[in-house]
Amino acid sequence: MVLNYAQAPISRVTAANGIEYAYRETGEGGVPLVLLIHFRGNLDNWDPALVDALARDRRVIAFDNTGVGGSGGTTPATVAQMAQDAIAFVEALSLERIDVLGFSLGSFVAQEIALTRPALVRRLVLASSAPQGAPGMHGWAQWVIDSVGRRELDPAGMLDVFYTRSPESRKAGETALGRMFSRAEPDTPTTWQTRQAQYDAVVTWGIPDFSLLERVTAVQAPVFVANGDNDPMILPRYSHLLAGLIPGAELKIYPDAAHGFLFQHHEEFAADVVRFLDQAC
Image (cartoon, rainbow, N blue to C red):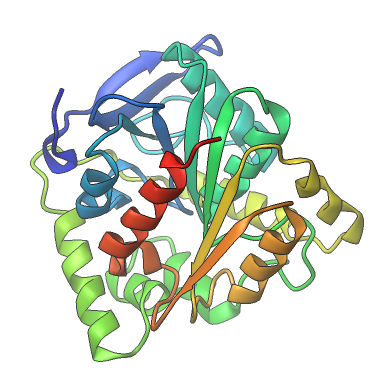
């Protein structure tokens, strides 16, 4: 088994839904930890430093969901279908019990997996997350979607959304990007179709509906919710709301950090996640 995410090759598996999924994995042992990436992200958008820290004592698997990056098919426009496709990928690997770390859009999908297939998910980490139907979540601020949602990806715009204006945060962001995009075998870039479908899913998830907030109270797995204190994409108040709705959920807000807090504070966040995952059920 390759023990370094930056060196891990891209593997492929065909699920029962007919989709061939691209994935990378590293580490071994324990309950597998499945990673669900953010809006427009692919396998390369996971910081190798974070993944390696998570994989010291467990198997960690990152994958491109349907229509994303190197995976086949067409990206669906609903979180519910993304969750069904993620379950199909997990079943294709013959995994019967998993931990899940969902980041941003991936955290919406993670919630849906835990609600749809509760017997599958042992523990759940929700990074930069919000519950479905939360008021004020109906689309991102215009400057945010302009920064990360244009037809051509803009690294400077990504830095503006994922990191704060402080020199420390910005330097951490530039360093993280350097770690992400220095590999010899890059993943296939995400397409404009993926961008459009994923943003449709994000906007639909955020249509205000107080009755939908009750859904997450049914999550049975232990949950750790985390965010940066200056996240402009998923405002910290939504993480507070989510943690308050899920019985027994843990919450941590990281300082001087925006949407990419988990990369900026990768050592601390990884230690927090490992501690949470290693707790006795």
